Image 1 (cartoon, one colour):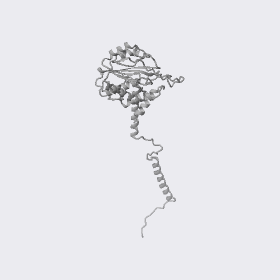
Image 2: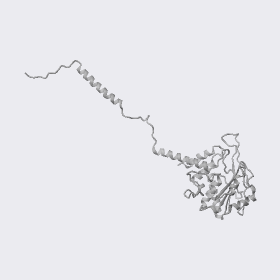
Image 3: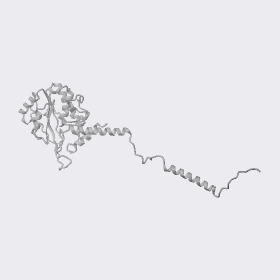
Length: 319
């Protein structure tokens, strides 16, 4: 007899149950795959990332803005209750106490800087001097004699306290500003400068005073510089070169500046006589030129002029 393996009969529905089990196993595998999907982000939900070069450029711009704000605010004299001072009448330069060629050099250089800044210049050959540059080895003696000869040489509209400080100053270069709201005759120019005769009266051009009905955004009048006296003490100049001296004279004569301020890291000719040898400049810097230009191109009546000057300087210096 041929032998046959015994097979148990399969219950009804066996194949259907098997297929159902396979289907459930497939569903479970699919469910597990869906429960832990790979981390993906769509372009819509992804946060944009700025290139490093953009971030660095923005950081550098912010740093530059802080430096500009510090420099402009520190350098300029800006009273809280009145406009800043600048030349609105034409400037007539006179340089005394130097050989003709050196005096001509300073006069030409200061005139060029004034023109570049936008300050008005009197180009008439016979103009009345109102911007005096006096070079002497005995400034104290000379100023004492001048004041005795012309007691009204200093404008005292802001008080007389600063006059003694100016007369006794030990600076290599000292500067006095005669500024007023309008054509005051309280300050007359010097009648004798180191033996060189000068005009005995100021050319009192009308002061800019534009009234706007009491706007809180504008000054009802502005302060104009009527005359400036820059006295150079040759015994204290150290090793300053004539070119740097001329640029310094232009800077302090065209703008009412603070000479003892902390200008931050800004490069400026105002450091010419600082104690630090490394910080001393050789010429008017781009920052200085931008500051002078901003002073003479922004609205002098605006109570926001200082802020406008910061914006102007920043625009000039930005790469």
